[in-house]
Length: 614
Ligand code: NAP
Image 1 (tube, rainbow, N blue to C red):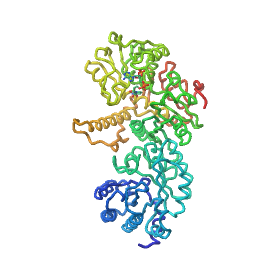
Image 2 (image 1 turned 30 degrees about the vertical axis):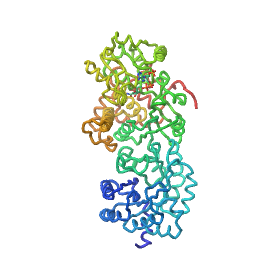
Image 3 (image 1 turned 60 degrees about the horizontal axis):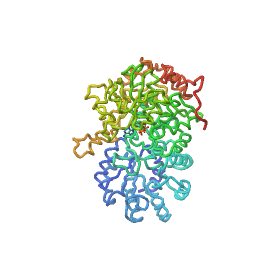
Image 4 (image 1 turned 45 degrees about the horizontal axis):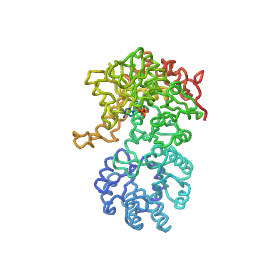
């Protein structure tokens, strides 16, 4: 090969790089090539993990056929040794020989780990660099530390790309990585990210921090690094190629958070509504970790889930009336000045789901439980004029809540003797693998049974209620409506409610199928994977029309009109100045008429009660 040409091609490679590199790995070369062929039409940048193969040199002949057939492929050869976290058990010299051969058969770039570069003599390194573009890489499988020190060691080698990979042990490690990329990418072609579940932020946002490309896996179970996202999810759900400097970042914070439906739901809705925003899972093991990221990522807003709904409240600069009443916050909005506002949309979600079916004024409602969801039910229903009764496993907490909310406490043994309009299950009984019912059959004396548990959709309680001929309401309704309200608060646009519901139902169906597949006597499971995660196409135009017709209830039993397009734009623009306003919720704690949307978009005349300055 002609060295000057190689140099020119290698040095300009950066300009031709797609933004996602799909890492292709298998112990079997035929499977490796098959996986590459399956993706090459969609993405031309592929990393072949030769270290997974037992005989990489022999495998190169097979890979050459693919490269000859697809000259548009930009192929990176990696044969990482075990000392650097790879699978190759051979010597340093053998690794170098394999990489040279890879360059000879048409690989445009070769990845050598810093440890190898340091062990090579300079002439051998130069020789490698004459054969292809060189990526000097470093992987830290434990932490994201000493980035600058590592980089100092790396830049001693004149490489075409420097790849620095850490492991996120907290959310803030992503911030460290992105700051590092911003510092270094002005003068060098950088690739950087954090591995691990908590590294998702960097996998999606590193491109805008200066990384030339990011990595993805070919499919579920085919990841080459912890936390690697499947190519299609990265492209379709997180729209990584569209993320730019002005893309707003949202997320759901909790611990644990891996199985949250919210990213699929919000990313679909953002895409459908043409909102330049991305929504991530934020696994914070401590609230302080999230608070630091709120400032530095910066996040425009956040959904808050267990266990932080109460813990976040003292950290808010301002909050709505429902947050103050319930002492729980599930929605954050970060203003342009960095101040953090808290909203409670759980109450709205619960009331919206109920009011679509029941007139709450004067209705007798039994709430089971005295935790966060129960508080939303109690305060929400009371505010709508319902007569509320609470019972709970621990009677003292139910009595305390009843006192605080000025509603009735009912002993469990009296439930069977009473009649209600609605029974609301606000305990986790029936959730996931728990197949129990919180009530016995004889205690189901109501017209409606509303189970806030939504996974599975058909809980034991719902099945029992249906068998008795009662009306049932699934927890999916509350989940979708609370999310829809968050969407409206963040974007100022009406939420595509029906489309959001479809996404959740599809996700739950996929999870149910996956769970059934693990059961020994399960019927034939559907083939399901995260790659099947609902794409925004699910949210069809038809659905959008319906969503407009079914615009969120205004809290008075009638439906709020969806904002006309012009107004919507105005609202979206002015939502930047969002402040929770007293007007955003009615006196009774329900969401106000369309004024609620105005309240979201315009600064309120009178600010709600200050929670605490930080
Ligand atoms: P939480 O704050 O931990 O409260 C749980 C309540 O359930 C407590 O009152 C607890 O009683 C009671 N409880 C727990 N285990 C029980 C058992 N085995 N038998 C009887 N009572 C039991 O939880 P949360 O945040 O309120 O959530 C409760 C449920 O609502 C969860 O399943 C959650 O997924 C669901 N939820 C759904 C939505 C939605 O959008 N659909 C939103 C929020 C919550 P003690 O006081 O005796 O401990």
